[in-house]
Length: 434
Image (tube, rainbow, N blue to C red):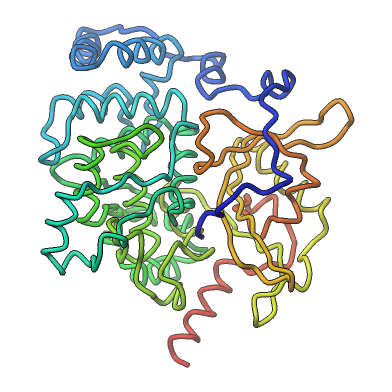
């Protein structure tokens, strides 16, 4: 979905709220208090890797690297292939990167992102005139005019940026592994995921992999090795951000990560220069952003976990909201149950016109829940379009009516009558044959 032009009036920042701040713990702090955390360089090999990485970094990044070590995050190895944060930072600084990219900068950006994932943004950088002229000389890049590349903050990558945020906060080892692979000369990363994360049956999972045009190879134990890669135009954006990045714009890592995620969800049709994608089976009427089903697929592939995209608004044929699929109390319970299971909740909020028709939408993330001094439920949120690296806080009763859909744990959905993945698959199969 395209991010809204302005803030929702009832979404208010409350960063001065001490209770909220105290309860909004960072991922690193949580990790530091878990048992069995490895925060020491015990072997010569690990010590050498640490020195190799530190020697390439700017002073600020070296300080952050030291903090990651002390908190246990640096040696966290909960990645898809068992490699640690340090292992992948070492790959970044010692192995070749895509021509025109700076390995030390990429390593520093990856460190910054996992140190404070809220720094991740969806704001595109501008394309300098000399580069735009060169781009326009190559019509095969899909750009017709300079204005096609002037995306700024109104980008359609809010879904991808939200999933990038989740990955950096919840699985830093995998985040840095992806940053290493996407910026490498291979320009891709391979993940092994269970087919059950994609669909209930092997047949349905394979059908989705084929229809999403995602390169894969079936493995043992009903798994698949999938290849995730940005579109080729992401290299231009990444090189621009290497040399011309302004404050508040996407980092090189943001560019590559969001391009890869958008490409995965759009059946490999995304164009990083124009922030558009082709109309496809799963999104036949929109060349911007991703549909709910595409978002669900992308999240399942990235996390390797099965999620349920839950629709809370019932619409008529004109896009007008006619009813809710459940009451606000049920929605709050489903969100709370997912948070209690250790997962963030990506939500799609919408704006409507005077007739109640949806005219705009935006993806953001609920990261925490608590009660304020008045007994009201408050959500701590992250918004990749808000130009802030701090969480903001909003009353649940104010934002719940705006939530059109959310990625909820299947267990939290329970017996609620909502379209399941298999229902969507059958719908699209009928669409093909219609």
